[in-house]
Length: 243
Image (cartoon, rainbow, N blue to C red; front, side, top):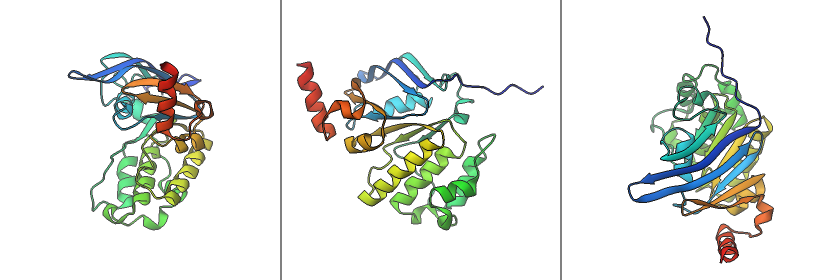
């Protein structure tokens, strides 16, 4: 007998309620709550060490929360870890592949993990990687490696994609090209959670943002509502409001 395929609930794509994660005496994520609605680009902003990547690890099921509730497409990332990859694609901040692996070999390997993978030629074409299909990973430029990491995150046809510090280290032209790509991905029906420390990036792309500071959510809302051109200025503004 065939097992019925899981159908996620409509509406909210990601739910985080009172998430807390400790590493020994250090509280990396401290009572964090936010939601990501289906179809939006949601930004998770913060300086290095703010707790963003630990939050992503909990969403991806790589770390178990110490307390709180996390749901992605209605799934518990730990209890439903075998089902989750078919709904969630993740591009991690520091994702590396073996130097000798070619682009097409990497795509075929990742596609083999999913029950209904996307068209590899279609993804390579959409991400401007078709001409690099036989190039080894070590010979790709920084921008090409980033586009490959996106292709690998999307090869399972996810409904939700988490992109972690996607444009860090890219030159301005490559960064703008990547922004255009993110918009195209959302236009294809993929909900995106964008993890970044660039306020300008959030202003250009995100419908809503949550700003993390020292493991906690300092503010949420539309980027235009936060009113500062840089992330550092935003933290100064938020601090002055609380004092």
